[in-house]
Length: 236
Image (cartoon, rainbow, N blue to C red; front, side, top):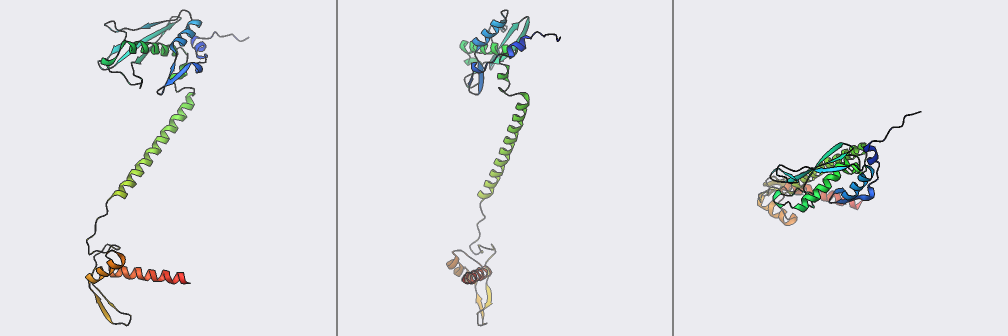
């Protein structure tokens, strides 16, 4: 016959369902300190807690800038100690000069509840609620991957925007806006084969009238040839 094993303090308290007793505020989950103390007291009447005072007898400790409390809970002769910063409603440390007695008392109550959690009661509240360790690891990896992909996407977008916003160097007034080379005089022939000469000024004047921008003779001839080709294709 298998020997029955007596349940430990942790086994007993860790089995208590606290889901309907917790409250979430500003991203943190809280467990009612009065309920937590009541549940432990019902199961372990010898439970007691201690608030560790500083050298001056104050129930908090400080580094000169912020403050925190230190509390211990003892069950069956075993003490669990917990520390907790004195924070505001945004969960930021309160500057020492602004700490009030109300802040200290509320922090002590929360700190005692966290110390009770070390015995098992609502412990998962302080470990990324309701997720087993393996699930938490997978979640963390996915969050890291998503953050990395988001960062890379933002970097590419910023680089693209920088390229688009980069100003195009303005061309001199006698440069072709297509090939971006200087417009020069042009010697050619008419349809009848007679030689003809076009000065740079004539070419710029003509192209500006037709294309609203300076275009060299070579680029104009290419554009005219392409337009003629497109017209012939459309007529077929």
